[in-house]
Length: 209
Image (cartoon, rainbow, N blue to C red):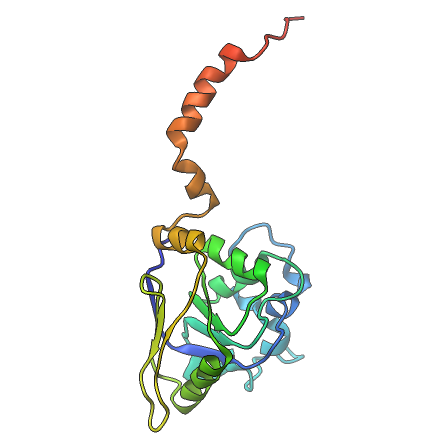
């Protein structure tokens, strides 16, 4: 996966708590075996009307949020079943970072494994971000993983944000260096090759039949 150092861009606000993984990617779309192609189905039941047309009231369909690469969400985002397809869908929809006041643990872990930065901030700061984005949807948000900071400029009378966030050191290391589980394993490729080369020497031989 690609290294993640700084994510800059506009935010798409989904101001709801306890958004579960079935809302993020409904179960009927889990038939694909590839990791890609889930983006058009992200938030499908909220994003589209019964006739399949875009729901104009849903944030992802509003023109001022088109092309946003940061998702702004409420508490306990990604709860529910531990489907990996949820972060896959959000990544495929163009989101590179998600900011919320809390995440379901498995969802946050799954995000880190594919290079999506899940940033947890205090509830007052998240509410401030919602207010700033509502006032000016074009405002640029900076999520700096190296410095572990989220920065947003002042908008009108609304104060900007300059907030530190905590992140698991292992996840931070993997994101900064673009290491998924396979990448981590391949860092020990020489040791693996040496083990495989020597393995037959000590294994008991199976008599030929």
